[in-house]
Structures are given as C-alpha cells and as structure tokens.
Length: 194
Image (cartoon, rainbow, N blue to C red; front, side):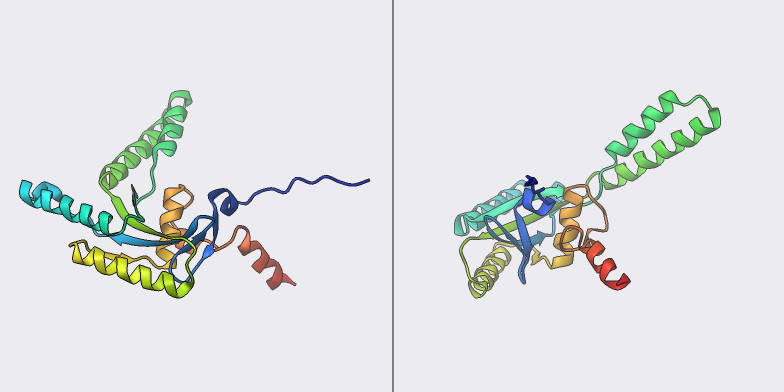
C-alpha cells in the first residue's frame, strides 16, 4: 500500500523567499536588496522644496526603473488586540474586570496614537539573474544614486530585513531574533538534546 502524502508548503515557499544572501533576500523572482530611507517631514518644507523632492524621486526611478518602493508601518499594529478587548468588555459582567479591560483599551489607544505616524520607507532593488559580484556592483550603484538624489538611506542588514518582514507580516516585533528558516530553532534544540 502506497501512501500519497501531500507535501506542505513552508511560509518561505508561500512568500517565494529562498534564503538570506550577503546583500539581501534571495527570492524566486531574483535577489532583493533593501535600502531603509530616512523620512523627510514635508509639512515643514516649502512648496518648491516638495516639488524638488518629487523631481529627485522621479530622477531616481527613471535612472533605476528596477527599484520598487515599500511603505509600511515601522511598529506593530494593535487593532486585533483592541478588537478582542472591546469584545471582552461587551461580554464581561464583573465590574472590576471591566475596569481593567477599559484600562487595557486606553493603554492601546495611547500606544497606537504615539506610533500612528511611525512609518518606514524602503527602496527595494530586484536583481534578476545576477551573480553575487554583479549584485554587489548594482547595489552600490543604486546606493550612490539614492544619495546623489538627496535621499538619506542605507542598505539594510540581515537583522533589519528580518525585523521589517516580521512587522510587515505581523509576526513579531522581535523579528531580528527569529530563525532564518522555518522551524530552525527546533532542529537546533534537538541537536543540543542529543
């Protein structure tokens, strides 16, 4: 009797991520190199300065059309936690527990308000069919152009990329401490126990 086993996909497979590389992430669609951009507070800039920033961004994208732009929260979102607490508050009969739940909701409101403008902006360079030395050259050229166009940015290291992915996929605020591969920490534990 032959068993037909369906092989399950890992999260990495579903996302198309193969592994971390020296410069970024290897995916099924090429290597991704990320640059974390320091945001500019445009509310204090003149109309002319904003137009100049837009022009510089257009120049960057026309020089390197392979660059992708990512805008995401830089902090964890508490919406699901708040919804859970509000549901519990509606159901709870004990006044002392209701008081504690209300305090928790208020705490999340304050934390969310403090982080409401916490966004991070990334440029992602997709390098298709390139050898590592070609990726290095392309990554340096893009970093130079980003700087020449007046953007403050740096190439993200592995820990920063892991933190970004964890926040983006709402997995953990400690993304930089997550293992590189699905379940890797359990294999390491088994080796230590043996």
